[in-house]
Length: 310
Image (cartoon, rainbow, N blue to C red; front, side):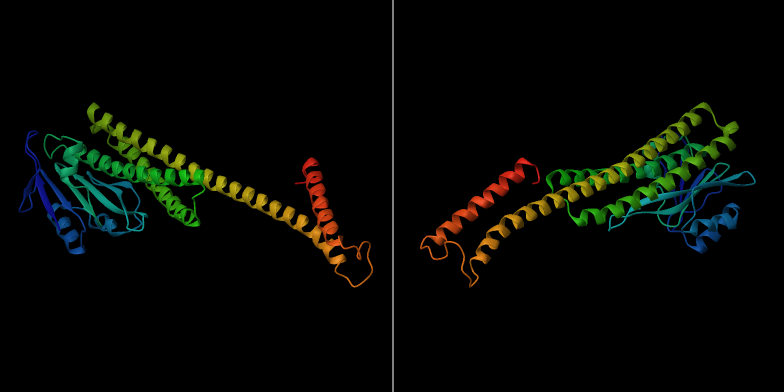
């Protein structure tokens, strides 16, 4: 579906148009098809080969030029039902006073951009580009905050010993999400540096400040990703240490019980043989054997505690 928007003054909102305009227009094409790409290419004289790159699921953020037209690729994140973060490529095109957003799946809506930046008209195409990148960055931030809460919940479970193997299986998804965010944010950071280098002469001070703000936000998110990755490793190592320590304590306890139970069994086994043994004929032999066994177990236990054997 191809949508057309225009904005003629700062006080106006984005106005949807029923037909394509040649100038002062924002073309928004989410879930774009091949036929729509051909239509857009013919309508606005764009490079067809670059446009078709948006359908490549593995296309990374980058900037490319064709004449005076700038093609900026980004990746828009979303969270699937399984909790995994998936991304899809989107393309922003600046051609004079025409701005285009084309997406293999979703794009950034004009309503969302209007809440982030306030371009005077559609002709402020650089403002629109910064707004799209800022909105995309904000989406990564929201997903990372949700990932952080998931990590914190697992850490709290570790303190109360309620953590399960399912939580660590979930950590595989968390690590995949962090890796995806790191890769795409790093690529977007490199793309913005390229934008800064190639469009420096055409930017004013306000544009530079806006671009710097977005770059700073991405740098902070990358630091957050590294922090979350370290927390995941820390929780996993802590759980491994706790599990090993708990296993050692249990094995030690079972060993002590085995030793203490074995001592009476040795004595009872000896007096169960059909041979003559001391006090075997005494009517109080059973009492003597039981008392002796208890005393022997107590002595072994206290000697073991005293010498810290157990």
